[in-house]
Length: 508
Image (tube, rainbow, N blue to C red; front, top):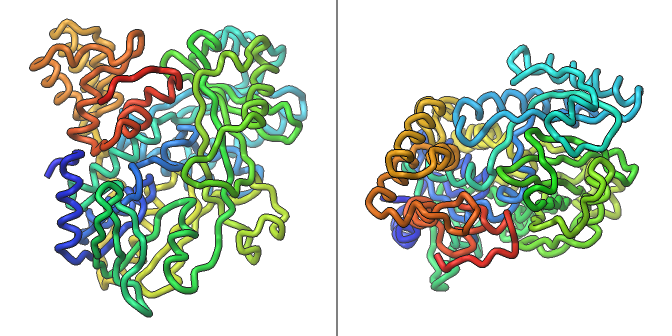
């Protein structure tokens, strides 16, 4: 069965007709990773998401698969080691979506330089000789070689992280789970749990038709991120564990900041935090904030204070950049674990959100119901392996995780695919760069995109003038990526609205 908008209703019907070993609630990166791990161990799996895949935190991050350098400041050596290991694995499994990016870290004083040097040396050592590249010092002129408008007078260090499109990675993991037999549906909300003393599945409501169905499963996993407390509350005895933190990013118009590498600058607030500036095709985005949040979880706002915080940091190194240069923004929520004993109460916690651990935890508060909270985009695969190990024990299975060796969206060499795609694009009269972009965003599906353009040349035209997104990408979103609404297509599959919020887009 295809992974398409039209297959969604078929998936819901299958969910109502069958009993599953595992029900995964939540279509972010963690839920998709759990579904993939469980399906590849041979379990029957259903995954439901109340909105679109990656519509929450997993589509609103800094779009970095990073080794956790700043966690060394808090002594979380184990977490950094895990992040570095998982980054290496993702580079191998999804080389088209997870790609190295050089990072320039400013050091404004001798003491700061000494601290950074020590941290980066430890970072390289924790990578056990398998880092993307070792760090080295760089002068202010060296920084200007990659970021010409840089106005600072001091240098810093260069090291490496990885960049990704978080929403596309999430969709690819969900598609891979589907390919291994998981039954997947978006816009299907869990409204109650089945069973009494033990959870035996859930009642699902179709968000478009209002139809309710009972989905029975031996084990249910709550992987809903910042909504985990709300979902847990559907079962008796659930406790509050999360303190959401809001992170905001701003996108700058083309030409505002020319950069061929990412850039880490200190905030202007004197709070010891940093702001990332990351190149993204023809523009740069900057973030992030880290502030406690207790508002609407579905649509956190980008407030003026958020904009001012980021712009103040940017303007210190890039004088002249103002709010007029911002063309889009997004806000995401981190599902941070509250300190033990605080019950998620901010007032009693007394801990700033930036000081809360990015670790994850898995709890079973009722038989048959596991809740996974916390964690990072980078470590989603390890988180999924951990929770499915516990699920397997409940199900009486000794099957081990296989996800270290399962390609995500691209089989074979990315370089070979790019070379062939550039040739095929040129054969159709398209710029070779279009072929490369199709590989870097769609992996193996670049072939289907080329086939569709060959059959209908208009699909090789841009959706919007002067932007690289082609009309074929809108078709792929519907037919191969279960995009149901225009927002699914333009906000998460193609990212057009996060390039420029003022774009006037055609109905898809």
